[in-house]
Length: 134
Image 1 (cartoon, rainbow, N blue to C red):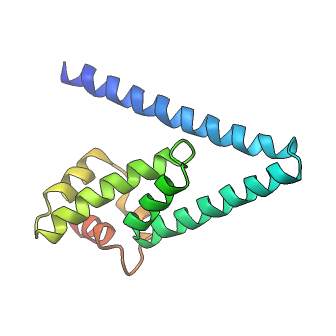
Image 2: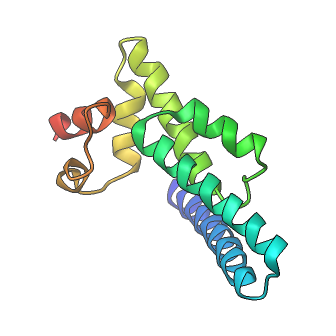
């Protein structure tokens, strides 16, 4: 039953990612048919998404989350919202001097930790912990 439940959860998550990607593609395709006003709106949204992506990569999760909500970008940035939520959980746990959530994240995100090293920044304590765990 646990395997069945995990597969079900994974399937739902994949469906969610598919929906987000489809919305992003629709958003990109709308640009080619847009008039000047719509093109301006497209560029505003694109700039906001670039800024949010930068904020997430630099660890400014709360600011990124606020921008996503303030500019109503949840439909286009659902993947980032999930990442922010997971990161905030891990960070709050680390601030309490506990590695439980970070290790839980490691177990559920089995990726090559050496791959993470390529994206490590000075602020990225979680990735350093993951690398040290290996």
